[in-house]
Image (cartoon, rainbow, N blue to C red; front, side, top):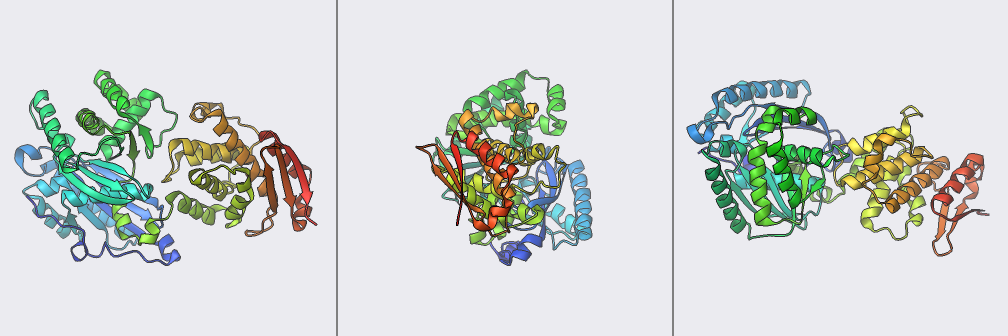
Length: 514
């Protein structure tokens, strides 16, 4: 077995050193990460090390380093060749992008293979890249930290399935706890002769992991890894889910069993074409589904969330100062978008304060979505006016945003549609809107119309045009307009104010502050 390194400081070559706290550095620095997995080798460049970084570059090569490992004890020869070629390409790309030294980690296949160390030595000689082979315990921690990048304060179990191994980590109060690892990846299971023997191996290993983790049951299960993302896409297809974003997709135990039956009955070639899933990825789905079916039977999670963030994002989280880790990834991402694309950066916070009195019963979760909408209310101004409302919806429902459930995405998109349009007129999106209750759709309309009015009255990035007074019992909406904003009021502003009152089923009254 290859010697493994833990990421605890000196051995890690500086990756665990925190990022600079200077906002300019956090916004501009690009970091390259290479993940040498059992099935694929991936190169990701994070554009900026802020709390919700963008993916400047993201490429993977399906190498299959771990194929045949259980039988030979060595890396797959063809996979090894392909992996080294991919690493040479990634090293050249890193130099071309003027990146700092790339951070590279290898997981189960290289960790378990007798020639893993020789592979790392050859990779360094050919590319200059030092590959750190991490133990299963560290792999589990990094995957869990990747989940925390998208969900600060998360609780439950993180299950990361690679090609050869599967790692578990517990989360509570935003901290990583107990961890366990087992050779339950699809490539490992494929080497076992006979379905009965595979089922026994799966059951035995999951029982062992259940004991090692202290037997948690009934919590949330976060799924990390390519095999689980493939499962999610198939589950979405079976349910005819109206969104295609994998991150934050939610499902449950019953769906796992239904989707396993769906996979067993499907023509995999036809299914792969329909959902744009490669044959290499489809090939691992049956084994992954067998593991997941047994896992949910043993751990009985309350619900299941799919995370697009994993080990690579965990490496980035590793370097973040603690105060940056605690920041809301959704709000930070929206602030970055406002600063980059809005005509008047900073007005989003003024607009939030302006519309907030309309939602007196909103809890903190609802208020953060309202704030996100206000920060994003002007970022699509460059779109053609005929398509601006639809562009807002498409952008939010497809964007790489953390800390945002699918229903919250739809709410946010619908509110931004109403910010630019007085009518909801995109029939192809009606299945998406059906995820929201009628009352929630009405609230999104109120928010959108309030932002639509507020955008007409801006005086400057930090100047409030007035204040709403909302009396729910009397169904009275009053707008107290500041004297300095009086010249901005006219027929269009008045019409938008009346439309807001109608959406709230309220009598709308304007008061000019003397």
